[in-house]
Length: 189
Image 1 (tube, one colour):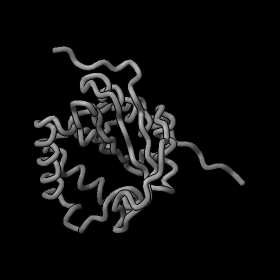
Image 2 (cartoon, rainbow, N blue to C red):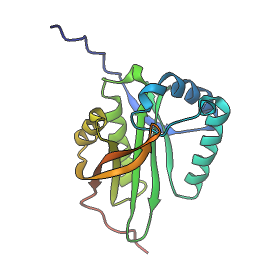
Image 3 (cartoon, rainbow, N blue to C red):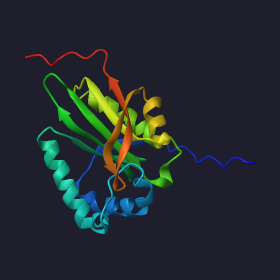
Image 4 (cartoon, helix red, strand yellow):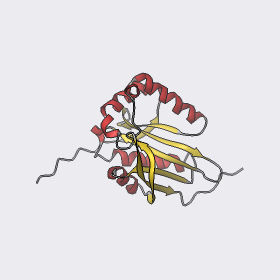
């Protein structure tokens, strides 16, 4: 039995803020990856895969960012090619200082360490500029590739939540992961 050839590792993986101008590319990526995204995303109507729907999603995400509730980011190869999305969502301040992480990568860029490097960059944003204490992520049971990404980035699995998220049209059990910033201190006055 032969092993499939590995894909070359991209030279650079970075994150950048998403823009309204990304709507067409996101629609293309969402449509191309529709089947793969059913593993860890909500069931989407056909309209979701249009430029107009992606622009509306971006408008909502950018409004949440302005209010300090989220950070919508694009995963980029070589400084220019958008190959996925990463979001730091549900930012809660005060006693919690926490947020949730979500991400996906185009199937053409999987198996190259892109998601792992993007999540590592997101950790820098969460514990750097955002000054969060905790970052959490939920992974549908059976999505072992996404769980490995989180584990490779230092996340610790801390539980199982039955019927936690509605993904692919059904309520799914999810593995819960977290990463805590050990050296976190609250912002000064």
